[in-house]
Image (cartoon, rainbow, N blue to C red; front, top):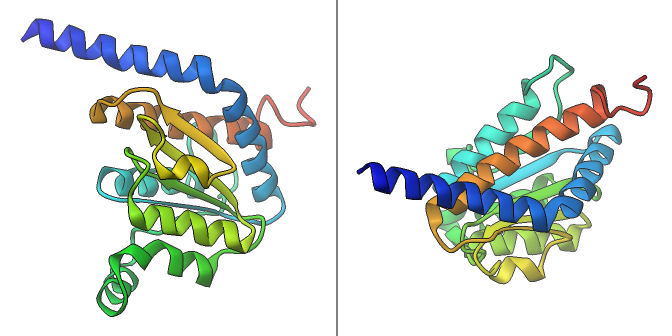
Length: 196
């Protein structure tokens, strides 16, 4: 059991290190894009399925409430929380449409749409990012493995470099927290333009 524990830990750390080594410039560009969106009165729309839905809700809460510093609420929403919207779209049209329809209804040009899918192939996330791209939103794919279909649809592609789903999800949570922290720092903290 201890061997499994240590090997699992090594794999998780290795995935995060590989991600950081290959994606740091993209993360930094994305942080500035997200900060610009929020500064301009836009919002961040986050969505995914299962554990990725939980991540979307977690990340939206960190923006709306607070992450590490006390600051004004930031406009973010998880498209995974309104059961009446989700079930009516799923029932009347298709589960594949649950995010796309919300983006068409609520998204505005310049908003950020962040789709999370460990495989990169979840059809409702794919359609959500396609709708976001068509409406002029900044598109972000947080995925794993080879990036799947999503890697072709997003302005910013963040791919956890592993095919082991738990490690992909661990990288995702780390990246989500990192984005929250860095956006806060750019807007209100040590990285703010007027910071001394």
